[in-house]
Length: 169
Image (tube, helix red, strand yellow):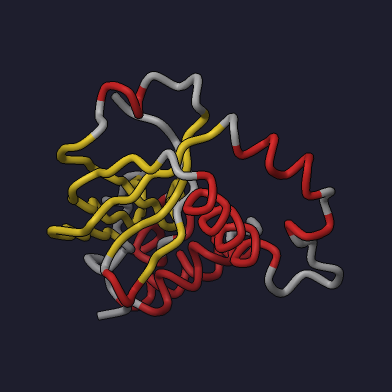
């Protein structure tokens, strides 16, 4: 089974923390066991029009740049409201950080928040191994890489451009 979820990384204990809707069967079918979490980084279509080598010899084709990590671990389900509340606070604080007026769980009425907790269960993935892979135009000549970075920026894909820039050979 697969479910798209946000996680927060607990570096101290080497685990990912998140939650699932109680009505999602995923947690019932996987109460304890192996889990795979796929983390996506930037990914982008790369047009050969951005390559300097297109005008030199024309032997170019489109491709796709990407950055991904597959995280394997043991999944544990937590149905303790205090445990889940802590994870919700961590996730919220992480995603609200840097906003001009960050929202806090404490902004919601306590009774409402506690009611919402009854609709979810906590998920803990204790990390066993990580496999990361990226293809970020590192196989292209320097002039083509420059063109990819410029093209991604011009198309508004700053995260893709930064990824290529940071992984130049």
